Amino acid sequence: MTLVDSMALPRLKIKAEDTEDLHILSAHLQDALVPLHSLHFDPEQQTFSGLCHRFCWEHDGHFFQNKALYHRVHAGLTFRHVRSVHHKGFHRSLEKHPLNLLTIQSNEKGRYAHVHLIFSGQSEIRLEVASLLCHLGDLHHPWPTHNQPSHEGEINN
Image 1 (tube, rainbow, N blue to C red):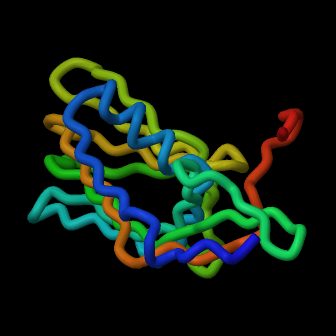
Image 2 (image 1 turned 180 degrees about the horizontal axis):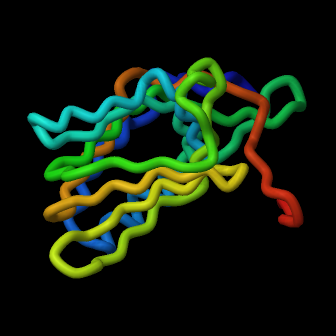
């Protein structure tokens, strides 16, 4: 079989305004690699943004030279209406080590909602938001990789 034309794969663009939207966005970001140095909170603009290397779960794997072939893509993620940002489980001094995003969850507590970006290694970023508004968009064309993320204890088909 021939190599898949990465330029022909559609770019993803998602907007999340409620918990259901965020669940869909989170599924597309599972196993994204997030470099710490790409994360930025602008308190004046009330935005939290970052770049990631998103695994393209929505594209079926292909075979090239008898090896499975998948895709990753650079993507941008932005949350609006962010009042504060808290983190645990990592130090900002480790900026060259990317975090592996497992899921994004939200819950409402009182006047504000909290959005939890949960990473492997029990690391977390918690955003306090006045209302949920998040944008995710692929920035470039995907590139091929032979590495599919796996989780300990899961069975991969």
